[in-house]
Image (tube, rainbow, N blue to C red):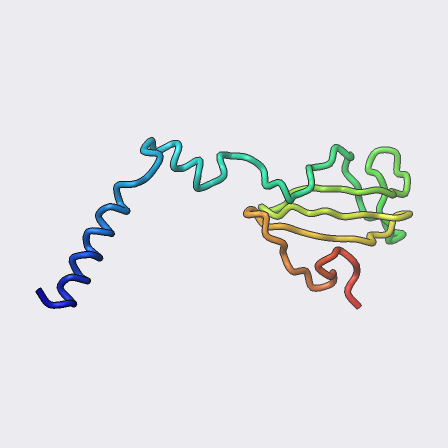
Length: 118
């Protein structure tokens, strides 16, 4: 037998074995493995329980209920993006974002560490 025939036979046999060596056969189990089983990515901050905040005419962020100038952190989702924002005396001082796969999103006005870009 010629060497290229042996290599071809070995490659075909290997591919046939690899196709039948899956640990799980149930469709739901395979889908869970692919999408993480519905679990939240561990590197993402948890959604905050802080009430909504709004930007007022004075340019500062205020609590919607009560109207107090807001200081603290807010984590929320919008359009499949998870946002982490921090405020000091009504001014946004920190922003980071992640896509639905938990990959950080590059932001134009903010550095990767959440600090404002110069």
